[in-house]
Length: 222
Image (tube, rainbow, N blue to C red; front, side, top):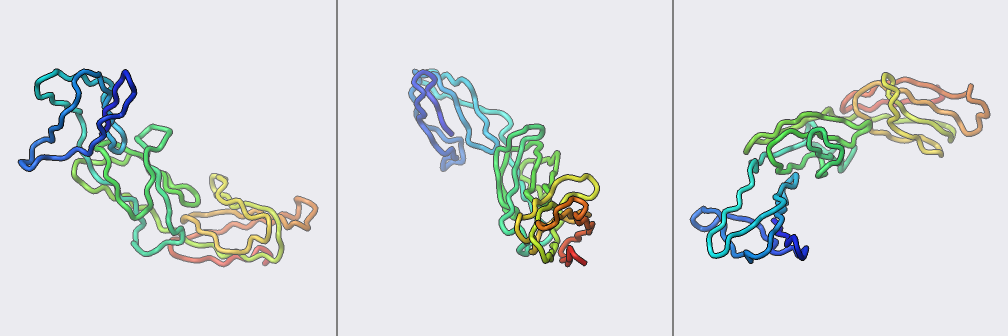
């Protein structure tokens, strides 16, 4: 936690709160003259705008709703996935800015409440209204990815889009797009035009389906 002198802007003291040997709330000394703001470095951050102390007495500072639980984003299997170190952004429900990012398979302690998660899969995976309760683990499991093994005999331009929503999922490299692409389960369409093709009518369109844990071979020119 950090106490900030509202007059000088000085951040002092900055301490890690604990319990005493008697399992009682920690006590420390603080200059009673300034008015402070209090920042609690929890996830998400909490605090108090104004803290005024009474000289010569034991002051108790109480911040409500500080119970904590655990969020654990994961795939169904703990085996290494094709995304490698996939990041997951955590938001307070309804907020536009994330307050923390963790790797899938890890756990993080957060305040109890309701959260939204964004998994940086292809395409992005959104999980809304995750309820975190006091002292309980909350596991959020999403489908494992599959793979597209793409083969092309020409360089060119193109994209992979969701076949249903038409959401743009992957921008193909401008050279030869052959290679492996990791995708969440679903149906996709690849749209491609070879660099040497001088008319849009020569564009190639191919729709395919990805399933969890499987690889699909696709030759653009078959």
